[in-house]
Length: 170
Image (cartoon, rainbow, N blue to C red; front, top):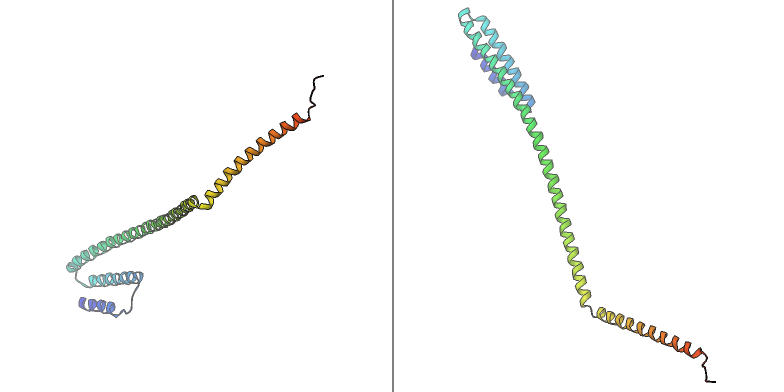
């Protein structure tokens, strides 16, 4: 009689086709456990008293063991969920950090390129011959302006002295 139940249990497991989700497998296991418990309960009632006590004790032991295992399974699932959420947070944090470092590196390279371009342009301006001529012309212009001021000052004195009446000896 027990063999018949076990054969039916194995047959029902092998009849399922396709891929099952974890929740489907869990509900299938739960229903399998429930059927097994029902079969064990009906078997224990049909046995005689001495044999039924032993089976009853084994059944109760199996039930308590199943409850402990179910409890541990739930704890493991909760811990797994918690660890996955932590992993997601750490992964997101690392992604943000890598994005920042990438942006920082590109900005740093761009800044270095601009600084190099500016220094190259300054060097080019220093060696540019027209710039040297321009600076010489500016120096010459400044010297000529000073001379012009000095001449104007001298002219102003001369005109002032020419406009004064000369005193003759009387």
